Length: 326
Image 1 (tube, one colour):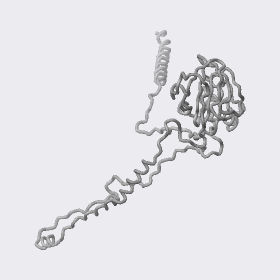
Image 2 (tube, helix red, strand yellow):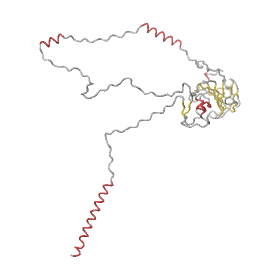
Image 3 (cartoon, helix red, strand yellow):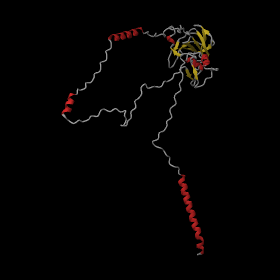
Image 4 (cartoon, one colour):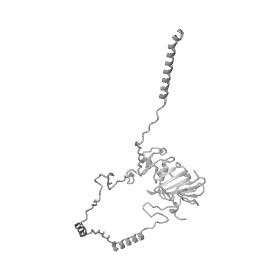
């Protein structure tokens, strides 16, 4: 009996301890669960506006992968040294992708920036409330019932009915004005000049061309595949200047052209002579029509030939439309 009485409090303490541990574990388990995500419904989400595209001036060219300063100058009808000077480039062999280059002389009329103008509404939009209590809503007169009487009937019969107004007819077009307009249209149609199928209309920059080599034409112009004509021959055959001008490029810096000579004839036309074996002129040198400027070869080509181009404002055009027939 004394033994049981001695151990009874310890059993009670043990049960209390176990109970406290169970409660503590239950609370910890509940706290370990992350709360469910809360999403607010019906709220408005701010959407970031797309950035406006950068405006590039009309007289600026953005350098792309594979571009060279010489090629950009050729495509724009320029001397690459002028292009380098306008853009502060000291080394013409070093330009960067994404670099913006001015391709027109500073201060020219075409050097304006092309800016998109926003659309402006010229008339204000009328706002009207949708609730029925607004004073801005126009309502028609409410019809009321009047009790029948002899006086009311007589008053209704004596009131004249409103007659709708007819719109005045639009005046007919004067036959004389119509006849004059037709006569002017016929005159303009007769006086319109037809473009020459051989060359553009003669202007101050038009020049007299000659063939740059005497060989057979083995490749013709194609905007997609061939920017000029190919003339066959033997290695060392003379390459002649197709017109008077100044040598603006002499070298092999344009991929696919080999040893190349470019002559600027005036503000409109350039001519290019590619795949030479040897170049006989220097940059900046003035040349005359028919002067020997190079020797035919196969540099950067699959055979001996001359690749000849004429460019008008930098754009390749068909030389056969400008060279004399032979």
